[in-house]
Length: 369
Ligand code: NAI
Ligand code: MG
Image (cartoon, rainbow, N blue to C red; front, side):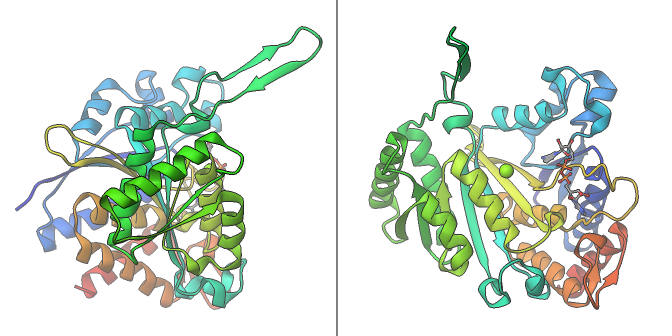
């Protein structure tokens, strides 16, 4: 039996509530399906700060580096608004991203049939939608230097952010996108602004060269990022995998996500550099939502974003494709049955608690085996 090492970092607010539902699933997969998950838990965010004054401890960082995958809940909340900047809850996530070198952020936009009618787009535009945005996460304008506000001395200030991309950064994110496309509908659309940005010129050039050299079997198109935003809401089903930089990806992935539903439904994955020893990619899986302090502790949070993040973990870190499909099928099936947490409650639905939703998904997962 394979040993699969998972580090669970539930964090704050609804993070632990959502993570508890994934733990139920892991227990069942181990007991009944011989999955061989070995889990450890650590502290991150405000929970870690309260315990030892850091947003994540060195010991938990070590565990994250040693794990096959990290499952992350959410961090933050008003309780920690006043803590020093370097140890604020978000610093825990930023440290994980940096030290695991998580350069590829995967944000799927999948439309569950049972929720198609509640999209802000027409039902026929989103029904059956299944696209994947691959966003570069560790480069670009969020990190480029210089990054400063300069006092010009004449009553004016000047703010500077710098978009920087090197060839290797574009090559490796393009590689991830092409490889993922091969497991899907074999199509990649690369988005940049080569008409007005030098980084866009290089982006387009390197994506095309990477395609030529190693992935010529995948269908590649290029689109200007602003036009891409338009096409995403006009005809989203034309896309399979979209690959783009950090800034455009931040916006385009939020747009794509909202085509399909509530924040409580949206999973994500961040993939990193291969581990030098094993060749396996480092990875962290987390819901898109935050710690939702407004509903924390009430048992009403939607655990689906966290559970769907675990499905991505099965797919991308452990190549457990059949189990990932089955888990996503179980989520679709409970929605089909009319089960709803409060955030997705609509006419005809039946409101259930976080825990009841999690248990129903576990039962479906069993039943579909
Ligand atoms: P949020 O995502 O926590 O909540 C936004 C709204 O969506 C709230 O009304 C919340 O109740 C609802 N919501 C979110 N997830 C839900 C779920 N699973 N089920 C049902 N309803 C859900 O974002 P917000 O309010 O801007 O931030 C709250 C805290 O979370 C802040 O401290 C923020 O810094 C932190 N945060 C952390 C993130 C992370 O850990 N990666 C990401 C975003 C925010
Ligand atoms: Mg964003």
